[in-house]
Length: 419
Image (cartoon, rainbow, N blue to C red):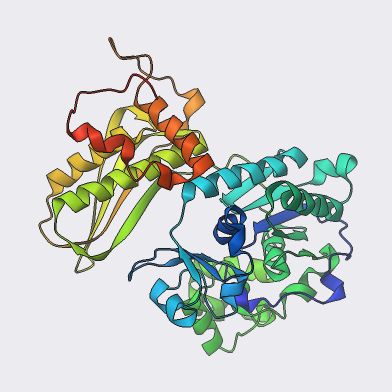
């Protein structure tokens, strides 16, 4: 979808929280400035201050900005250097995905208390189909209010909710309701809501597509809806033209799919300056494997294929992968494999970015673990799970980056017997 600033916050009573929700069984719930809000929740002294979460080095990128920071023009995906120029007084924090994953799981549990039909899109947003929950919890708007109240009371976080007859329109509604709002788009008024919006509001219209459409005089969704098919095809191509035409008329038949599963989980880092020292690369891969392992365990997933991503100083990007014999979620195994891939790659040139990713995911509880003759009863996975618990309670900094793995270099065959 296009940039959220294209959708000013609602105030039109036709689409307010008290509008007619007949036939509107789809909710889109979007947490407000999620990463920044989680940081403020555990650091109450930051409340009311501009807070920016993301890469804090000169090549960093903003992941989340509190609404206090957004007043200065700070936005997600903006270079951190630009954010610092716009808002030098903000508090800049590196991301802690262990904390965000824990908060996400708690919020998703609230959603699933209402309906089993929950389709997460990311850590901080999800679609809900509440058609079957009406008898127990009331009309869709009442369910939206219940969710917002529980998230605020139980998690000390805020969210915005769009209520509509389709996923596409519900997502637009939550965007327009931000921050901390609720907006209903009545089924009978979908076109009244859609057609005045800029074309960038449509899913699949990025900056270049919007510019191409605007050059043809198609500035609003209504303009696009009335455009001849041939004109659309020339601007955005055959497949996109049909897709955008359907959305412009409010047609989105997709159902909420609770079977949505992550295809891969990983982490990457962009170095502040290009790196040539193998020791620094090794240290980075250790930390990335630890992050990826923590996310896998938080999601209840294991994977079979470890992928290494390397971006060189001249922006060439190379990837290598290796499939393991047995699925895993341990950082130790991911690091061992990633380091072997790096050693075989031996790029020689300065490195700008490295990443570690686990692919071929499956539910951990449904994947049998291979037993090894003579292996201790408790091993690396238990040790790392204990570190996850400590990080969730005290913060990842208490155990340090890749602390579980750093000592393995001195004694490669040593295995912990206790977590």
